[in-house]
Length: 227
Image 1 (tube, one colour):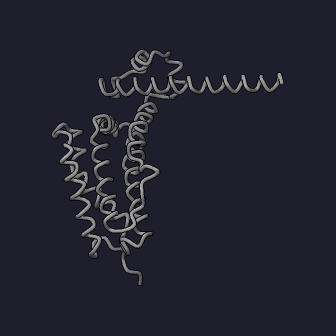
Image 2: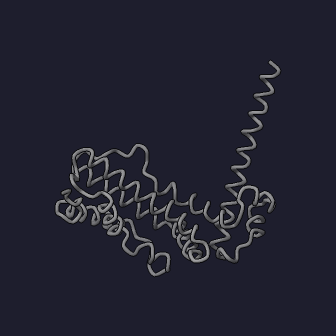
Image 3: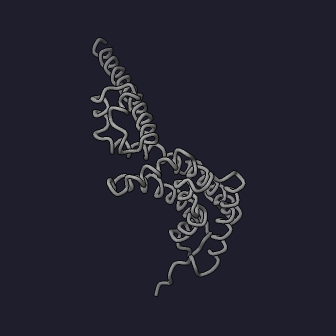
C-alpha cells in the first residue's frame, strides 16, 4: 500500500511539473511573439522576452535552445491549428456536397490566413528568410503544406466517391488555392490592402469553387493519359 501511494505521489508530481512547464512555455511564446511583432526578430533580445514572460533566461533556454527556435515554435503554434481540417469534416458524396464543401473550406482558409496574427507571422518569417531559411521552411510546413494537405483530403474523399474522375488532385488544389488567395497575403503583409470583408471572403470562395469545378470538366486538370 505504501509503495502504491508513493507511486501515485510521484505521478502527481510529474503531472504537476509537466503542467507547470507547459504554462511557462505558453508564457514564453506569447512574450516572444509580442516582442518579435513590436521590435522585429533581430532587435528583440532574449532578455526582453524573459522579462516579459516573467522567467529567467535559464528557464527560457531550458525550453528553447535559441531565439530562432522560439520563432519557429511561434509559427507552429499560430498556423498549425488554423490550417488543419476538422476531424468531423464530412466527405462529399455528390457534386452539390463537393461544391458546398469547397466553398466552406475556402471561406475558412481566407478568414484564417488573413487573421492579423497570421499575417504578423508571415511578416516576421519573410524578414528572416535570408538569415534563417529554416524559419521560412517552418512557415511552409505548418502553413502552406497544412492547408494544401487539408484541401487535398477533401478532394481525395470526393474522388473516392466517384467524383473528379481522372482529375489531378494536386493540380486542382494548386489552382484552387491560387484563385482563392490571389494577392491577399502579400497585400496584407505589405500593408497595401485591408483584410477582406465577410462578403469578399464569400465571393472569393465561391469564385474559386465554381472555376475549379468547371475546369475539372475539361482537360486542364486531368491526369495525363497512360500509354
